[in-house]
Amino acid sequence: MKSRKASETLAITTKVVLPNDTNTLGNLFGGQLLAWMDEIASVSAHRHSKRVVVTANVNNVSFNSPINHASIVTLEAKVSRAFNSSMEVFVDVFVEDNITGKLSKSNEAIYTFVAVDQHGGPIQVPELVPETEEEIERFEGALRRKQLALILAKKMSPKDATELRKLFTD
Image (cartoon, rainbow, N blue to C red; front, top):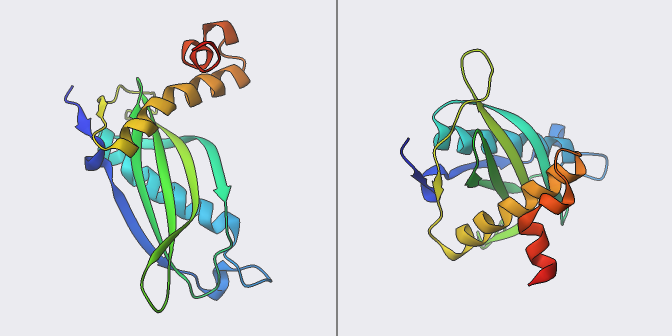
């Protein structure tokens, strides 16, 4: 199975925050942002696996700053690591300054997707090759995040989490 570069998994979308997308304070609903992130992350996972993908987990979501009504929002998703059938996908959310056009990062999330076959069963995905410094950093952190998730789900013993143990023993 051919490996893919992380850059080949990049998916970008731009949205405008409309009145139906906002709460009573005029800010984008968190749930709406989650839906947008899930959608763009699934495109990235599909680009990597070339298969139907399903959301397995939303590992981390950071709502760092509110996004106001009428804001132009750009979401960028990229697979950070591929495991056997699962893929970790980072989503970065940027808000565009209406005057300068400058993008400011406002939110981020980490999703996990699983590639499935025609019967809905997990199917193997290609390896991912990180290239940039950020891609390498996210790639290396993905195994620690996966091990932590497995420990919290009681699917892995802490003593078997070799990457997590390195954080405390090196």
